[in-house]
Amino acid sequence: MRRAAPAGDGRLGVGSSQESDSHLGLGKCTMSPPLTGTTVLDLSRLIPGPYATLLLAHLGAQVIKVEPPGIGDYLRLLPPYGPDGMNPIFTALNRGKRSIVVDLNDAEGRRILRELAKRADVLVESFRPGVLDRFGVGLESLRRDNPRLITCSLAGYAADGPLARAPGHDLTYQAVTGALHLTDAPPAPPTLPLADLAGGLFAALGIVAALAARNVSGEGRHVPITLEESIGALLILERAEMNMPIRFGDMLRGRRAGYRLYRCNDGRYLALAALEDKFWTAFCDAVGRSDWRARFAEIDQGSLIEEIATLLADRPAHEWEALLRAADVPCAVAATLAEARAYAPLPFATGGASSDAPAPQHGEHTAAVLREWEII
Image (cartoon, rainbow, N blue to C red; front, side):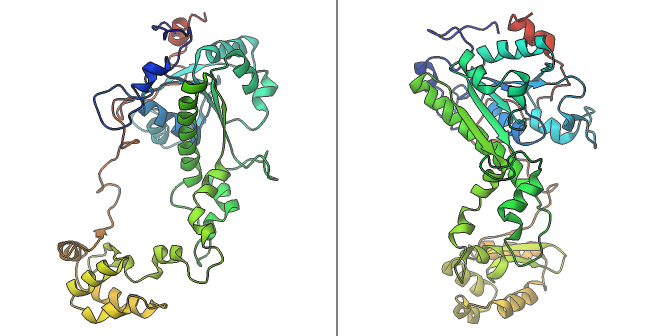
């Protein structure tokens, strides 16, 4: 791509270590985003890979979405459709990226990918294991062409497990890790695709770590991520208490009277988080039930939960919220998404991809990118 090349390196990249060091601060400041000058090729689709590269874009990276002919990333055309004619989730995950069409079934397409990879910093893919090798553009061969290239694979299941090559989705990854059996209730579909999101987050973290290591060694590396292991990593607290008769994790899931949701008389729910003794004491005093103080350490808190539920059902949630916050008790009315504020994809980073940038149409930037990279 026609840009000023970093000193001492003719490739597109993050530049010399001296230049890159000036971009390592991640706080909100006037400096350039930390990944300015980094080029990412994103061959992934659906949620995990695009989420990872979205985070990199918000850190300043230029992301080029490499899509096959036909419909490309099929999330784009799954209903419902937003004002841009694309699935709103696709739009949210791909804002600020560029899209090119590359046909890996064709020799010219494979040549184009190799030329792109020679000058890129990062390549992210989510094919099943071995697919790129069968196309003749395996990650090891791409890194031989460009030793500075960082590659990241997002696969479904752990490579050393029996399901390594099996198809899957977020629900199945959560199922095999035990994430759906954290309560006594029957397993239910999760409210968030945590395996997909955790996989994308760990991929972005691994890529940033690999970029930092490259500033020292000058060499790229491979970052292997699986969605099974990503959701499994989030269960670190649960596994720590797996064989304990009393588990702190159970307290955080509603078994503690001071840490749960209570329905109020307006139909809204109050999230009470009086987990520590000082907050519990403040709660009891604020609601006029100082006699509850001594019940803080009760093992079975079922009856106490019922008593609090009866009390809080007498008034609207926002009244309880105002009363308890005045007493410095952690609490909040459970907001709907429409009521809650919108949050940036990366709360600590500014200056990268705009949250209002459009998502690319399929192949929208093919001619421009190939011309800029002088591949055609």
